[in-house]
Image (cartoon, rainbow, N blue to C red; front, side):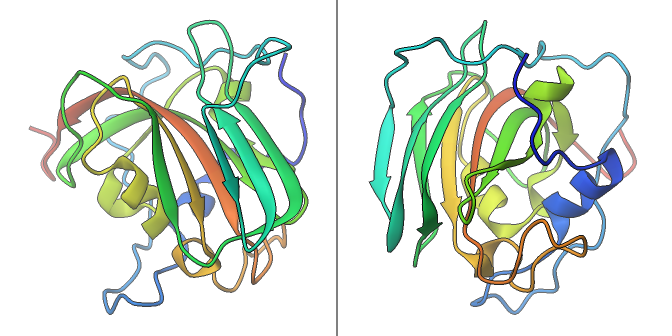
Length: 203
């Protein structure tokens, strides 16, 4: 089983994905997570709960303004590798496609099922992980924090993607519970499990 660290409740995790806005955007931030047609059984597979095997090699390594990051995407049997030398901070949000997908392209009109793990650059601790829950999270790119939206758009189903975000593109003032503080850079490593075009009326 993947270690439990600072996992948030489902309600807190929903807030985590939608609060905050980019410093260079004039658009209002979304106020709620648009989870469409929620179901206990979700299409697009499961999120493996095992840790990556010993000796897993990083697919992406990054030196931040401070600290560093090494990541590898998940496999059919294990979750992602995320190693942070703390404190990790970045001055620019960066996205890296670890493994390209071959399925449907993700747009703002998509509803996607995503396996993801989020890690705080300040302390290197996981604050939320669908790999620990075992099932993907369903969301819309236009209803998540700017850094997550940037990681999703243009990717295709099956892709493993990593993103390290500036505070402005995630939680500029931190989260209400204090898990993420003002000034924290954060990391998400995610796999896009399924996608479909969505509409407000659910058609």
